[in-house]
Amino acid sequence: MTRRATWAWLALGALAFAAGCWLRFQQIGAQIVIDDEWHALHKVLRSDLLGIVTHLDYADYSIPLTVYFRALYDTVGITEWGMHLPMLAAGLALVAAGPWLVRDWTAPAVRATWTVLLALSPLLVYVSRTARPYAIIALTTTVALVAFERWWRGQGRSRGWATAYVVATFIGGYLHMICLAFTLLPFVYFGAVARADRAALVRLVRLGLVTAVPLAIALLPPLINDWFMFTAKAGVDSVTADSAWRTLLVLAGTAHAAIALAFLLCAAVGIARWWKRDRLLAGYVLVVTGGGALAIVAARPNWVQYPIVFARYLVPVLPLMLLLAAEGLVTLTPMRSRVLHAACIALVAAAWWAAGPLPAQLAAPNQFTGHLRYQFEYDDARNPYVTLRPDEPVPAFYRELARAPAGSLTLIEAPWRLESHFNPLAWYQQVHRQNVKIGLTTPLCGVRDFGEYPESAQGIRLANFVHLQSVLRREATGADFLVMHLRPWSTPPGQDVPWPDVAGCLPAIEQALGAPVYRDDAIVVFALKP
Image (cartoon, rainbow, N blue to C red; front, side, top):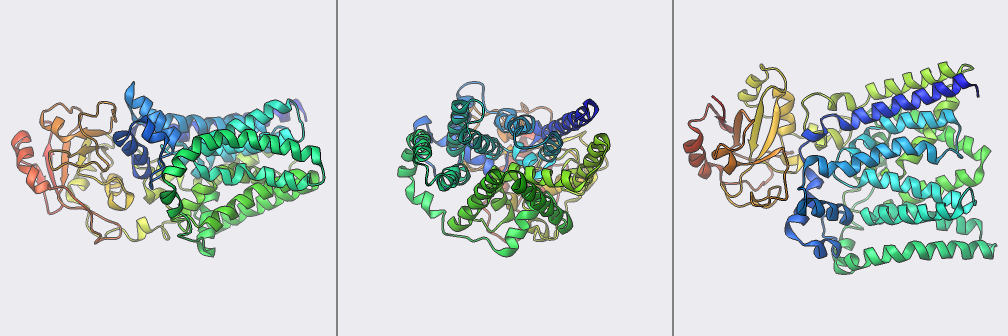
């Protein structure tokens, strides 16, 4: 390869990394902690360190991540940035270090193209921006699977690759046990390959023991304590042909069947190329990705029929899927000029990005990119958070706010529910285009501990959450309006949603803040500034 061609692919990879950074950092500090991100916060508030490391609970909170949150709570405090930092770092590390890891597997053109796909993948961008462990296990699983193959073949420093495998498998498995469905399969694959080689089998057994011991030490206590709750989440729901197809759309980062089929074609061409070049490697990747996926399907975990759930469980091997797609894309777009080839890949990637869900999510301000309105699946015509949402008018107050420049005002919205299906604030922000903070009503409108925390919990310092009592004391500065929601909202409508006694606490709010400036049958609004 000429020097000019090398620089073309290096430039493409560098631009892709810059784009990946931009996508992951956009408005990250303003994001409202929502849905499953609260599992770990609830555990921190209700348990000490011993309770965290020795239990799983039904709502899986990821033990190591919760230990990290507990350390923040006891020291500098839990902030939005602190919650998201490990996932942001892991997401960017995958984009930056992934191509180096597979340098012996693929050509520079494929590695540069893979960098582009990793950087722009909507699902990988999403998991890098949410306080759940999926971005980290995508990184650790990729490291583990590459390291195991390198160790098996004795490439380079074999002991170093073995160490990398053990460490990555332990971290990933401890963060979320789902990735063990993929990272333990290399023993099965290479065990079958070496079935007649006693020395090789002994080598595998030794590595297996070194891998199993730390996992057992970390995972057995919580599994034993919460075995019933752990097993209760299996054998419940099933993947269907339709949900598998919808999951593929999420993995491919698109709502369009043609793009998903193109993704499949590229991956098929990629694995075919690998099969011709290195059957052992091609078979390895097929077994660890396909076998792990089938194991998850067979386990029938809760809610696996929903595209975003199954897709998140497949996140550990999504980078390998994208690597195969990158190989196929490079193969299907041949050009004599490497510079033009790199430019062609960049144009294809730009079109993929423009046709995907990310442009809509980047509207500013948008503090709810983790809301399932955006993430459940990317086709609005099939997304129940779009099709089943209540068909009721948006309060006129929000439409009036839209006359002001976007992001020029700040609202405190209270009460709230952390679940996407009980949370209309993402829809309202699309209309009013202003900044949002969540008002915590405990104990002013009754004590609540779900999606709320007491003002005395000084270890939680979320900038986008404000206690109403501090608002009444005029200590919560920077907001323009307090919006009190009189009744709950649900998708689909009509569900029984626990709601604080707003009518009971409105007199105290009015006494402190004065008469409301707007009222209808859904909201009461108080001005916080003259």
